[in-house]
Length: 167
Image 1 (cartoon, rainbow, N blue to C red):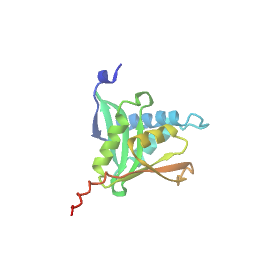
Image 2 (image 1 turned 90 degrees about the horizontal axis):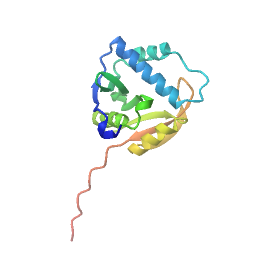
Image 3 (image 1 turned 60 degrees about the vertical axis):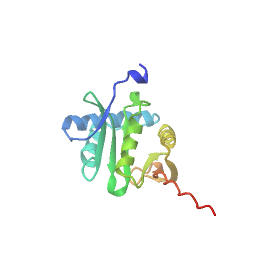
Image 4 (image 1 turned 120 degrees about the vertical axis):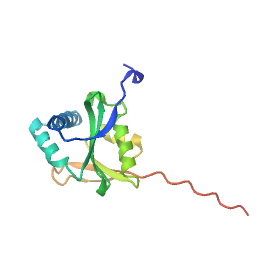
């Protein structure tokens, strides 16, 4: 199917219904597995569902990419911190503009700039963020998992400079 034949998707805020929570947990788990193929321990879906139920609550704002009632991708924003806490796309639906649309939405909602972290082992995500134009920052360790991660920053485009007077 060509890109022109792929039905359009739209973005919406999460409603928090139990079925929706399970869809988000499933996407998160499948995307995490795809990004961590060498992982020796993969948590059961109940782990991911618990995290959705506890972490995807206010002040977090969850934005879904959806097509025909089916959730395809999601992003968790912490706007007060200017932070994209999570962004995951169904692995088989990558390269269809879902992640880019979510990052565009983050830029609209946090116009003065924002940052995110990604595991240093997730090179595909790093390439995606760099293609989008994010600037690579420092490497540190996740405070709870201890996994090495890299910060990425989005800054709004600089306004054009006024022309200098001649003479």
